[in-house]
Image (cartoon, rainbow, N blue to C red; front, side, top):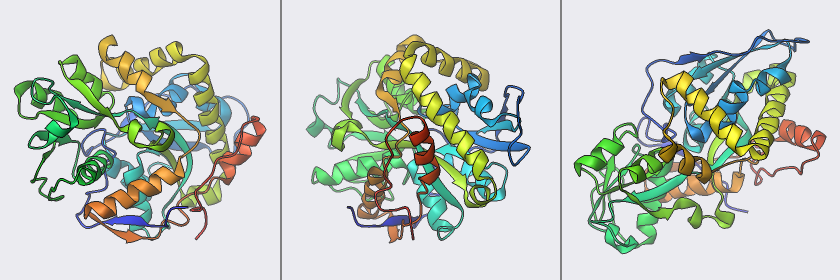
Length: 360
């Protein structure tokens, strides 16, 4: 088992973003089906997620009414966010109770609260991160040296992964300034395609669908991050809950987890319908759907999963420490997978593991 080390930002907000977008100033409310059936221990559960394919479980589960069905008479109220810090802030303030979020902000929220604010209760997605480059300027991995490569934000999940990859190549980069053998240019995913088209960057280490947007602009996938991980799996999205809500409403948490597990199964059983459902949700939330040349390859590269892939989250934390951006702290207690394993058993599925990080 890997050493139990987590992380705490040395720079305010450095670890906060999921890597899917910039800091959100406000949230958008997503419409939900009307509740039907017996009410659980609360009138309403407030969930949060990103309008992004890496949050496919939430997008599809909400769009198809699968989550609401499991909640019965308890109303599902959804808010969408553009970045991890705002979602963690909403969880801490009680504006949301449960959220789909990337590993970095989950670790950050846990560490900053001394392990009191949240628990990771399930997985959601793996993969969907690629190094895409201008093939005229970068023809091999060694050619990345000396080039300008974008990541979404200083200290975010993809930034840490790229810095770790650079270090393993034996190259030197100052983690804070991004200057060195490679120029690491922190760029909001929303503007990365334009930066690529203008020549301001030579490539980017980014999540989907930004990676596929770059490919649509003529970029080439030089490396899929999945190839760097055992079994090509690594956590990109988790399911978290506030500790208070978990303590007070375990029946509601279990219902959301049932909805999440059933949604992931529906996605696997109906990949084309699920892709269309996710895109319909994106259109409703952002005003426009993804075009097929972006949607199709992006969807294929993301795997929904009930397993939070706990060992990979710990490895990501260690990479952040090694990069010199973050200091160590204790990750024990970040997971509570008992409710999920109860749901999985009832569904005839095998249990998932917390890599020894389920208890303090």
